[in-house]
Image (tube, rainbow, N blue to C red):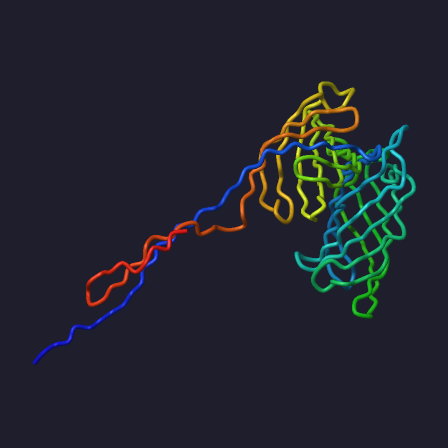
Length: 310
């Protein structure tokens, strides 16, 4: 009796996966197209809970308040946004526009004509309007415990429901240490990455220690965008002008710059800035750069099948 040896044929591959990283020296010239505009935000805050009648209890939160800054100080209009949340899923967004930039300063605050837009959950796609009346406990105070009431309607899928807010209690409104001033200007960019256009934004935080942070988001002719970050500490409270030189970093972007990073050196010029540094681009996933040789096992004996290194 004889036994025939079982013949097998197996292939073994041992790929090496690494991220193909590339580094490029960049040199860009940023030119301001316009003088830009400045606005103030986040000075005001509100957080309260109360009843919305047949819809149940909810939380009312002021999510933002912004107004432009002119040569003589803060001007109107004041844009105020709230969120009315019944739970983590079902929420409404309410936006008010007030001509008076100091509309949130009086002891009694009347906000009318708020526009409702559905955000999530059962109110996704909703519309409607809301009026709010906020009364501070401390007369003349910027920041105080307060009571809010309100009335309006919300329409969801063609069905309109009254909104009646009662007994909302919590804190409101002014909190100067949260102030964030924003400066935005349109820019043109040229240099080693080609030509592009974009927006430059600077964020000033007036609470100590005073600081300036910002980004320049540039879209190049090919459609890919790159975000250039920067920041500095002002030398005094009297001026927030950029120093002659300061530093920053690349904060990613879109397209070929989606995973870009690197350190940047900024220099102020009469018309804008120059930016130099090294950009490191990483692909979105690992790249196979090498495979070991393939071996074939036949009848228990290994044979070289081929060299597939790349």
